[in-house]
Image (cartoon, rainbow, N blue to C red):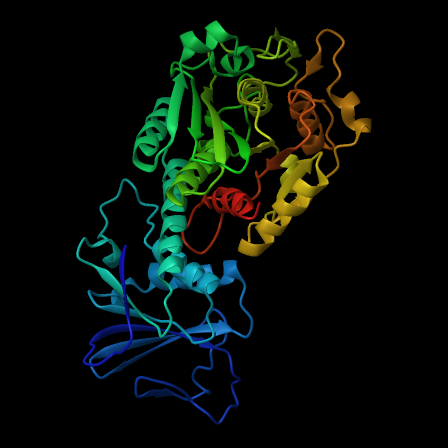
Length: 473
């Protein structure tokens, strides 16, 4: 989206987006702007409301902000306007920035407007959103210079839109190869290197756990490695994202909800989007990211319960449940990242367990870490932008849940309780006692229901969170 800051509205005709802080319904002072007055009985700025007035060849869209603003609410308010008021958004649109707004609030508002252009109907004939017209330029009426905030808001939204696409497109489109190609193109565009290991290379170097998950699929697994190396980087961060492009459950086949399993690469999608955003913002930190991408399919070649498989770090794994596959690809991803790149901090993100949803619902992701400072920084970063995390324990008393009689470790406890914790303990086993590691289980927040579509769809949870955490270091 192109933008232009303006300082007067002389002769303007078109649509004015006018954010208004809440007064009260009994106020005798009307809301006024651009010669247009609205009585408080009609509209007084209540959160999640808006009011349209046609006057002076302009459509005045008064947008209620409520009394207090947080980043996520503000972003949603403007996404709603862009998404649901397309009929009044023509060639000429001005966003009026309230005097009270700071740069972070401008960033959120702009980001929301850009996100409002998203349409889930990828395979339907749709009219292009007015903001996506090549000639469209959003005018921003402000007395201050918010150029950096505007640019940043657009970059954040663009990265999240890419993740929306990756997660929402069907699995016969977004294959492991599709993710690999996306990474290659993004690397060229934004400035990070990309290396892809197909089946042959993965076999050669011993990514056995990763390969076991994908062996029942005709689609070749792709082990995607991305490395962003700015000059004079301050710190080295490692990321791993689960990239299961479709999860049938394997031979422990899912009995419900399989239609949504195209979203099982949402952790990988978040890492891909975060790499785009980190490089686009030119953050002064080295970031190495791995997305092990494959399908968990049902076939004569599929791995089966009771199999014992190997892994990149040399440990053997007893397979109790083939639907506990995400932790298997993450195990090799973590092992490979830590051994070969040695990042100072490691974060993995995955739609890993229904247990995390049962524990925390759809409000926040589950956080597991062995580093208290890392926990605080991740939670603080999430709170700032509305991508919240809550820490769950990693006590050694849970280690027995992954102990196996026949192998070094087993991939599933077999118990109906503490599933998210035992999964985290399994991943911890493959971190080689790394001193600063965090696991984010985002099964309840990466894909869900909201007002912007009739079916479950992507949220891009993690893209901004990871980036914000790195910014805050």
